Image (cartoon, rainbow, N blue to C red):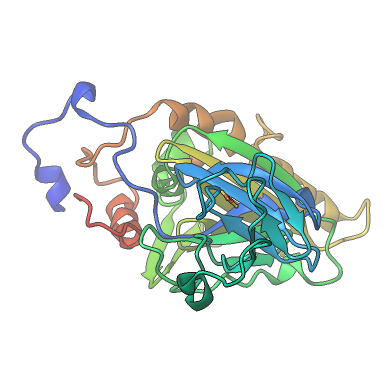
Amino acid sequence: MNEMTTIERIQTGDELERCPFPIPIGWFAVALSDELKPGELRNLHVFGREWVLFRGEDGKAGLADPYCPHLGAHLGHGGEVVGNTIRCPFHHWEFDAEGWCKKIPYAKVMPGIARKKPVLKTLPIEERYGAVFAWYHPNGDEPSFPLPDAPELEADGYVPVRRGQWNIGTMIQEIGENGVDNAHLKFLHKAPIIPPVEARPDGHKFHTNIGQGYIVGESHGPGIAIQRFNNQGVTMLMFAMSTPIDTEMTLTRMAFTFLDHPEGSKERGIAEHLYQHSIGAADGEDSAGFESVDLIVWDNKKYRPQPLLCDGDGPILMWRKWFSQFYAEPVKP
Ligand code: FES
Ligand SMILES: [Fe+2]
């Protein structure tokens, strides 16, 4: 019996916070690549605060604190991309994607600190799979793990990537917990049985296998979850990118693809069905996808730090323990 089932008093809803955790550490998609052309900038609200996202003429994207280190003007209101830098509207200081001040048009000498280090806070950026990823760490620490490999998104022979995005009214830990909660698959999603689940933490990765190979998943930190749906030798990739807007709101973007089997073939039919089924467009066939049912739960639930679990539940506490490594401050179990 695990310790969580020995609790003596069940907390009421009044005592629970919806989302009691800080923004987790990890790689998070902050935009799709085609939303940001060279020379463009956008104001963004992610990680519970404001940022300005821009792309230099060299194609390199930057995500910066929007408040200018000079006198605090907002770079996203009146600022412009000039060459490979973002230029503040107030006195035209220019900063590159790493936050170095590259130009002060009226200074004879660059201030000492600006010659030694970046003066504008920026986040490390990597661009891959058609998305701009930022590394978030509340203390500004450097990336501690890489972006995952998802060969289907880069190889030839796959159907053009299909995308979707959803605003989900909860934190990522709660969304990801679905991947180990096999009991809800029968009762919420109406699967014919409770499929078995295997789960294995592995450093910054977490592996799951639901229904003996039907859904094989790997999370790479909090922000990226790859799931492969398999049926009769056909595989459909779901690449989910979840980004904390703040501590209670998540934007989940998904990319789907599968091998480009000929139209009309049996394999094509199976792959299309796996795709439709995964998002909920094939409701009423064998079970409901996340869009039609999970969102109702996620948008309205509260987090129970001490859940009342039963012996048929999946490895919920294993998931929570794994996820806790992505909070910079220790959190209560
Ligand atoms: S406040 Fe930005 S250049 Fe002066
Ligand atoms: Fe679900």
